[in-house]
Length: 158
Image (cartoon, rainbow, N blue to C red; front, top):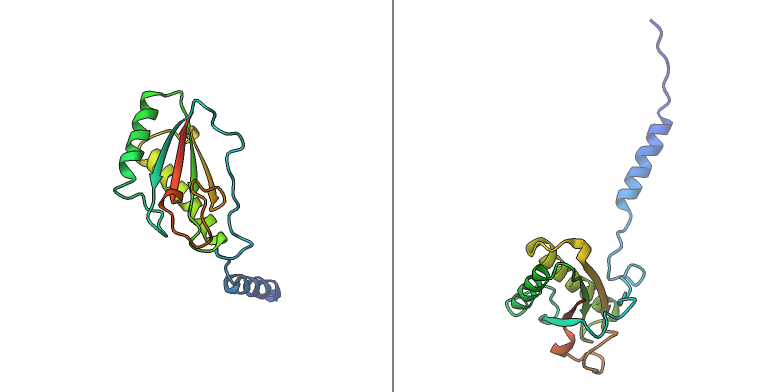
C-alpha cells in the first residue's frame, strides 16, 4: 500500500488567518469612522405633509407610553390612506457627543419604523427612515443642553 504525503502548510495558513480574524478588534458605532452619518430627506415632504412627533426620554430609543399613542395614530392614518407614505426623521438634543447622538437618532428612527412596519403592519416600502442627530434641532440650544423638543422622531405623512 502506497501512502501519499500530504502537506499541511495550506491548512495551517488558513487556520492562522481564521484565528487572526477572530482576534481582530471589532469596530463599534462609538468610533468616528463607523458612526452613521446624517441623512436628512433629500427632498422636503412638502407643504401638504401631515406631521407627527414621537417623544423620547433622554438617552433612550424605546417608544414609551408617551410615544405609543402617536405611533398608533400614524398607523391608523396610513391604514386609512393606502396611497400615503411616511418619512421618519430621528433627532436628538445636544447632550452627549455628536457621534453618539447621530447613532442614537438612527436608533430612534429605526424603533419607530419597526413599530410601524412590524407592529402596525404597514408595508416597509411606504416608510422611509432618516436621522439627523443633533444637527437639525427644533429648539436651538447650546451644547450639552437637554431639550425635550429635540428628543423626537418627526414623522411626515405625504
